Each structure stands twice: as structure tokens, then as C-alpha cells.
Length: 114
Image (cartoon, rainbow, N blue to C red; front, side, top):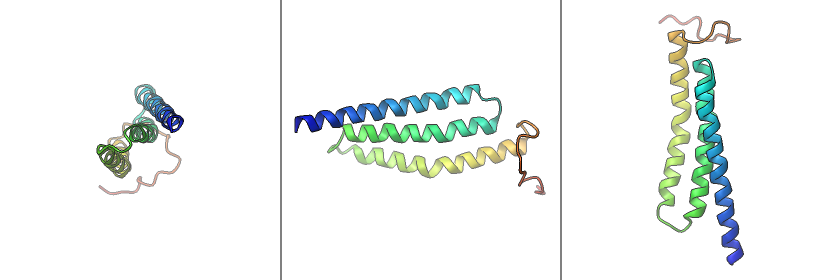
């Protein structure tokens, strides 16, 4: 059983490092991308997947401990709130007209009367 524990430990290390690498690429995308819509994409997709990988790696490392349920709750709340936050940021950016002109191919919000 020692080899099983060592294997799980290495799997958790790999997941944590992969998650941290995805979070780093998300942070670089937020800093480097030119407009809000591009930054929003970098802030939601790799950041959430990176966090989930880190949480799964931490849960494997803490298996059998009471804090695993807290990690599950953090992951669930992140998965539930990230799409809503991204939607609100995108709508606000569109209404504020801070994006580049001609960036959107289909403008579904163009006929709104606010």
C-alpha cells in the first residue's frame, strides 16, 4: 500500500502544478489582452479550470480529512458563480462601449432600448 500512497501523492502534486500553471496563464491573459471581452475570456475559463485542478489535487492530498468538504464547496460555488459574473461583466463592457469596434460578428444586443 505504500506505492499506492506515493502514487496518489504524485498525482496530487501534478494536479496542483497544472492548476497553478493554468491560473498563471489566466493572470497573464488578463494583463496582456487588449479589451474587456478578451480579458473576460482569460479570467473565466483557465482560471476556473486551474482552481478546480488545484482543489482536486488538494482533496487527494487531504483524503480522509474533514477539510475536503470545504474544498468541494469552494469548487461548487466557483462553478456556479463564474458564468454569471462573466455574463454581467460582458454586458457591462458592451453597454459602456469599452470594447473595440467591429470585434463582434453578431451583435445581439444592438437593438436594445435601454
